[in-house]
Amino acid sequence: MTTSETPATGTPSTGTSGAGASTTGLHADAVRTLSGWRPADPDQEQLRLDYLEHLAAQPEGLYRSCLPAHITASAAVVDPEAGRVLLTLHPKVGMWLQMGGHCEPGDRGLAEAALREAVEESGIPDLVLLESDGAPVPAKLDRHLVRCTGKDRPENTHLDVQYIALAPAGAQALISEESLDLRWFDYDRLPELTDHSVRDLVARARQLTG
Image (cartoon, rainbow, N blue to C red; front, side, top):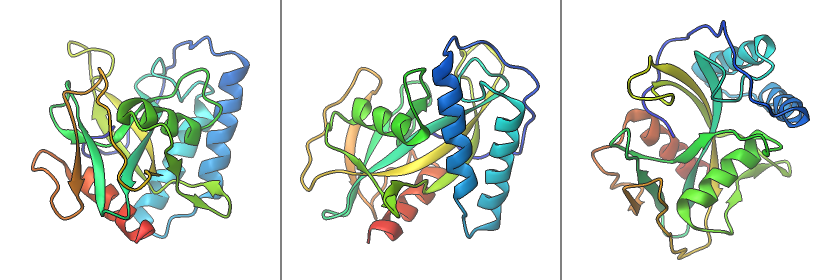
């Protein structure tokens, strides 16, 4: 999930995730994914390079224990046939966001983490990530400040890798415990409580699936 983008921050310290070999696999996948992705937008290209710099400095830089920044994964769940997007009302942020969150030790890659979060939070089991050349590909990147370690703790930075998840036509969503509300919105009628990052992601999803 995402809020508004913020300036770059360093990543001088890291915790221990206990992920073992799966950490190495997830880290390698993230490096491959971001190394192979080439956005046309110069701001996105700079973010891509910043993410890779973070990964080069932090072997466990995809886990919430890595502070003050770590990579996360999210997905805009869309029903292209109906021209709608599924958004969740996040209980901590109080805004409508796409599905997403922290990577877990069992995730084999960024795309898998994004899809897992999307399925868990949407209640739609048969989501499929948008692909290019036969493999899931990020739609955009977003860097933003959050307090995922607790509301009384300092802000840290999420380096979010955002995908597009395709839902079957007419898919019925099922709200999870992680959400205050879960609703489909027409592309042209997004709720007021969304930020520019969510709107940019929806616009990108619309462009790529239209």
